[in-house]
Image 1: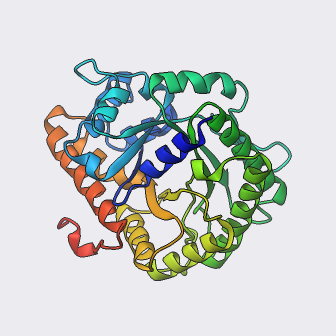
Image 2 (image 1 turned 45 degrees about the horizontal axis):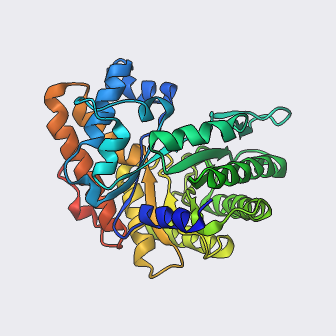
Length: 339
């Protein structure tokens, strides 16, 4: 493990004005996204869609890295160039999702544990050979009646720390993603309470596993109201609660924070990030690692048709540019295209 190299990669992923595209949807997830636009989820359609994203001209001005799925990291652009090379040539760092999804946590109804640690030590060197320089592991924490339990949080924190240690051993920067889901009717105060507990336990485990924090990134949820909560917190409340939580529990040694969008609309995710950055300078870069919040407008523009590729690329470029502005706290809803 070269600590200097890990830190350099981590810092490059949160370079000023840039963030990460999460294009690591599993086969069932991308099928759901394609179904919404009436496109069959064939391997060629998945490849063509990712090709569209990765070859958007000028997007490297705002996108520092891309998280790939196992299938995608092995695919090639239309001209036969491996996707990892397509990204590298633009100065975009390729990454890889390595967890195998959240499965039911036995004995704890309604709670989940991310699987994929078995054999991970053997898989990571291959991903590095394929071009990956960072990895991602997502744990999901639900809020509901009697949950999350402390055991569920601890089990997921332990798995995240083991994954992170294995990544650093293999020379990959681990993105640590403990997501407190926004499903449910909980208040923003309840989300803050749970997020604080989750991040506290995650950093206790990372420290116990001797993970070098400078060579990591955190991918947390923002502190928001549950989707079903009648009192939906506005952007300033979300920004203040999120930043307050980070200050309480995230060590300043962490190279950067790349928020997930977690079901927020593209506008919400961009506005919330911008308001946080407008609050002033923080110990970490506050950036983004968005999936749906970057891709929803692209999918709607594309609809699986080759003739729509230029419009879809334009939509991706614009969404990336707006999030680039949010990195400096300079985004405004007036920058959005007319409906």
